[in-house]
Image (cartoon, rainbow, N blue to C red; front, side, top):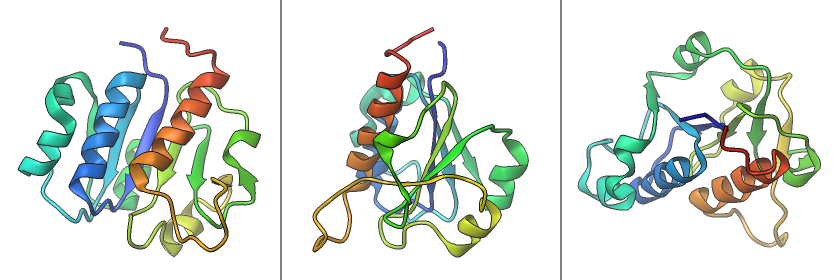
Length: 156
Protein backbone atom coordinates (compact mmCIF):
# COMPACT_ATOMS: atom_id res chain seq x y z
CA UNK A 1 0.00 0.00 0.00
CA UNK A 2 1.21 3.46 -0.85
CA UNK A 3 1.46 6.05 1.91
CA UNK A 4 -0.36 9.35 1.61
CA UNK A 5 0.45 11.13 4.91
CA UNK A 6 2.10 10.64 8.27
CA UNK A 7 -0.19 11.42 11.21
CA UNK A 8 1.55 12.15 14.52
CA UNK A 9 -0.34 12.13 17.83
CA UNK A 10 1.64 13.79 20.59
CA UNK A 11 0.56 12.43 24.01
CA UNK A 12 -2.97 11.28 23.10
CA UNK A 13 -5.24 10.78 26.13
CA UNK A 14 -8.59 9.38 24.94
CA UNK A 15 -8.65 5.82 23.51
CA UNK A 16 -11.69 6.21 21.23
CA UNK A 17 -10.12 9.25 19.54
CA UNK A 18 -6.97 7.28 18.79
CA UNK A 19 -9.06 4.34 17.59
CA UNK A 20 -11.03 6.61 15.26
CA UNK A 21 -7.78 8.09 13.94
CA UNK A 22 -6.43 4.57 13.38
CA UNK A 23 -9.51 3.84 11.27
CA UNK A 24 -9.04 7.13 9.39
CA UNK A 25 -5.42 6.19 8.65
CA UNK A 26 -6.55 2.83 7.25
CA UNK A 27 -9.03 4.56 4.96
CA UNK A 28 -6.65 7.27 3.73
CA UNK A 29 -3.41 5.32 3.40
CA UNK A 30 -1.76 7.26 6.23
CA UNK A 31 0.78 6.04 8.75
CA UNK A 32 0.09 6.66 12.44
CA UNK A 33 2.84 7.77 14.84
CA UNK A 34 2.11 7.98 18.57
CA UNK A 35 4.47 9.85 20.89
CA UNK A 36 4.36 8.89 24.58
CA UNK A 37 3.32 9.44 27.24
CA UNK A 38 -0.08 8.08 26.34
CA UNK A 39 -3.10 8.36 28.63
CA UNK A 40 -4.13 4.73 28.04
CA UNK A 41 -2.82 1.34 27.03
CA UNK A 42 -2.73 0.81 23.30
CA UNK A 43 -4.13 -2.66 23.90
CA UNK A 44 -7.22 -1.42 25.74
CA UNK A 45 -10.60 -2.80 24.77
CA UNK A 46 -12.04 0.66 24.06
CA UNK A 47 -9.34 1.54 21.55
CA UNK A 48 -9.57 -1.83 19.86
CA UNK A 49 -13.35 -1.43 19.58
CA UNK A 50 -13.00 2.06 18.06
CA UNK A 51 -10.35 0.85 15.62
CA UNK A 52 -12.35 -2.28 14.83
CA UNK A 53 -10.46 -4.62 12.54
CA UNK A 54 -8.34 -1.85 11.01
CA UNK A 55 -5.24 -2.60 13.12
CA UNK A 56 -3.88 -4.95 10.48
CA UNK A 57 -4.35 -2.33 7.74
CA UNK A 58 -2.32 0.45 9.38
CA UNK A 59 1.37 0.99 9.94
CA UNK A 60 1.59 2.32 13.49
CA UNK A 61 4.71 3.34 15.38
CA UNK A 62 4.97 4.24 19.05
CA UNK A 63 7.81 6.37 20.42
CA UNK A 64 9.01 6.81 23.99
CA UNK A 65 9.20 10.60 23.68
CA UNK A 66 9.65 13.46 21.21
CA UNK A 67 13.39 12.90 20.83
CA UNK A 68 12.78 9.24 19.97
CA UNK A 69 10.26 10.29 17.30
CA UNK A 70 12.61 12.93 15.86
CA UNK A 71 15.59 10.57 15.74
CA UNK A 72 13.67 7.87 13.86
CA UNK A 73 11.93 10.01 11.24
CA UNK A 74 13.22 12.07 8.36
CA UNK A 75 10.73 14.59 7.07
CA UNK A 76 10.69 17.53 4.69
CA UNK A 77 7.45 18.99 6.01
CA UNK A 78 5.85 18.65 9.40
CA UNK A 79 2.81 20.77 10.10
CA UNK A 80 1.91 21.52 13.69
CA UNK A 81 -1.85 21.77 14.07
CA UNK A 82 -2.62 24.18 16.90
CA UNK A 83 -5.09 26.90 17.82
CA UNK A 84 -2.00 29.14 17.93
CA UNK A 85 -1.30 28.53 14.24
CA UNK A 86 -0.64 31.41 11.88
CA UNK A 87 -2.08 29.83 8.71
CA UNK A 88 -5.44 28.21 8.20
CA UNK A 89 -5.26 24.47 7.44
CA UNK A 90 -6.57 24.94 3.89
CA UNK A 91 -4.12 27.75 3.04
CA UNK A 92 -1.00 25.58 3.03
CA UNK A 93 0.18 23.34 0.24
CA UNK A 94 0.45 19.70 1.23
CA UNK A 95 2.61 17.11 -0.46
CA UNK A 96 2.43 13.36 -0.31
CA UNK A 97 4.15 11.96 2.79
CA UNK A 98 3.92 15.22 4.77
CA UNK A 99 3.71 14.87 8.54
CA UNK A 100 0.78 16.38 10.43
CA UNK A 101 1.28 16.61 14.21
CA UNK A 102 -1.60 16.96 16.65
CA UNK A 103 -1.35 17.54 20.40
CA UNK A 104 -3.12 15.83 23.25
CA UNK A 105 -6.80 16.39 23.90
CA UNK A 106 -5.97 17.98 27.26
CA UNK A 107 -2.82 20.05 26.71
CA UNK A 108 -2.32 20.34 22.96
CA UNK A 109 1.28 20.52 21.78
CA UNK A 110 3.98 21.20 24.35
CA UNK A 111 6.59 23.95 24.51
CA UNK A 112 9.14 21.22 23.81
CA UNK A 113 7.43 20.52 20.46
CA UNK A 114 7.31 24.23 19.58
CA UNK A 115 10.99 24.63 20.48
CA UNK A 116 12.35 21.52 18.75
CA UNK A 117 10.17 22.05 15.67
CA UNK A 118 10.40 25.84 15.61
CA UNK A 119 10.88 25.98 11.83
CA UNK A 120 7.70 24.02 11.19
CA UNK A 121 4.55 25.67 9.91
CA UNK A 122 1.86 26.09 12.56
CA UNK A 123 -1.64 25.77 11.15
CA UNK A 124 -5.10 26.10 12.66
CA UNK A 125 -8.67 25.03 12.02
CA UNK A 126 -11.11 27.94 12.28
CA UNK A 127 -13.86 27.78 14.85
CA UNK A 128 -16.06 30.15 16.79
CA UNK A 129 -13.90 32.22 19.17
CA UNK A 130 -15.78 31.31 22.34
CA UNK A 131 -14.96 27.62 21.90
CA UNK A 132 -11.86 25.91 23.26
CA UNK A 133 -11.13 23.14 20.78
CA UNK A 134 -12.33 20.64 18.20
CA UNK A 135 -12.38 16.92 19.00
CA UNK A 136 -8.99 15.41 18.13
CA UNK A 137 -10.26 12.75 15.73
CA UNK A 138 -12.40 15.36 13.95
CA UNK A 139 -9.42 17.73 13.66
CA UNK A 140 -7.28 14.96 12.16
CA UNK A 141 -10.06 14.13 9.68
CA UNK A 142 -10.45 17.75 8.61
CA UNK A 143 -6.74 18.18 7.92
CA UNK A 144 -6.09 14.78 6.34
CA UNK A 145 -8.96 15.12 3.90
CA UNK A 146 -7.86 18.63 2.88
CA UNK A 147 -4.32 17.35 2.32
CA UNK A 148 -5.57 14.31 0.42
CA UNK A 149 -7.86 16.49 -1.69
CA UNK A 150 -4.87 18.63 -2.66
CA UNK A 151 -3.04 15.58 -4.01
CA UNK A 152 -6.20 14.65 -5.94
CA UNK A 153 -7.02 11.71 -3.63
CA UNK A 154 -4.03 9.87 -5.05
CA UNK A 155 -3.66 6.30 -3.82
CA UNK A 156 -0.40 5.52 -5.60
